Length: 344
View 1 (tube, rainbow, N blue to C red):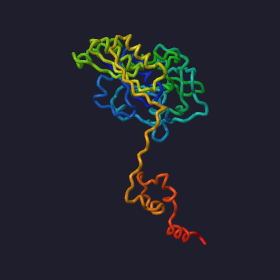
View 2 (spheres, rainbow, N blue to C red):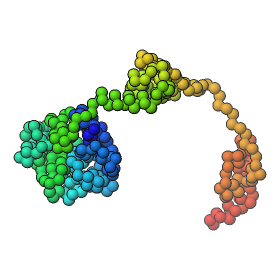
View 3 (tube, rainbow, N blue to C red):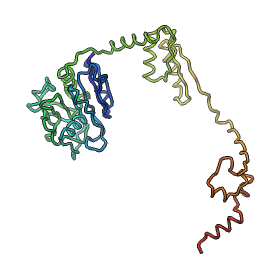
View 4 (cartoon, rainbow, N blue to C red):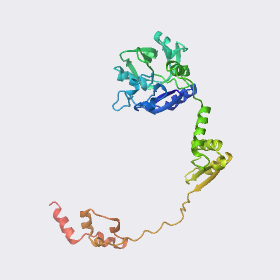
């Protein structure tokens, strides 16, 4: 099954990119941005997307793609930080502009953009969604500008000879006009991905895998009552014998009022055989246990001044209230030493 690899550099929209690709019908997989792409990662991969990032491409320590991303020969699409990183690494300039581009911004295709396969079926002018403070001041050698935003700022670029593209806006966001069409042009057109993924097909594959692993044995799932674990529990109840599925909910005592009862009610409606482990409640009115009296050691008879000089206080050596006055009173020898150190 064909897949698109998404390299994550910390963007708030990375998961949304993956979702949009899957909605097109193509499987997507997200990896850390600096991952080296070996044969296993590249298996069935037909294209790569570089996500945005809260970092500036020119700042020290900013994440960068591994060289294998570009040496593998697959098409690469940089989104926001992704294209800025590609521009900077290939000799272009990225700078912070006085005015940050954020929210809906008009984008106009140049003649080169109108002829690009990335913008097939896209109007010459459309409203995009941007979220960046840095912009491309000058493209890297070998790159051409496909579209511009207000003020002539590059909004989309493409390499003249290599299969590399970039957009400064976020086509994955629903506010971007033609955003889905642009992603389809890249995934289906440029990358040539075949549609082979759907949620139903995914569930069927996972069901077969779980049945083969569980067999006829009982299955225990620790459940928190949140969306993820509840959906997982419902899925197990659907694909396995409900009599063999056990959902264990642990009431830590830190839940909101009546929340545990609501969780148990929801699980029961799913047909689950649930068990609840309730932690013992703390009785705030009960007295705290008495502190054991420290055992005296050979050193406990030493004076306060000798302990402070050695720096070897131990819990068992702290004076008890009844003897604190005697033990904290400096000895005559310590008073003499203190007097000798006093400036005259």
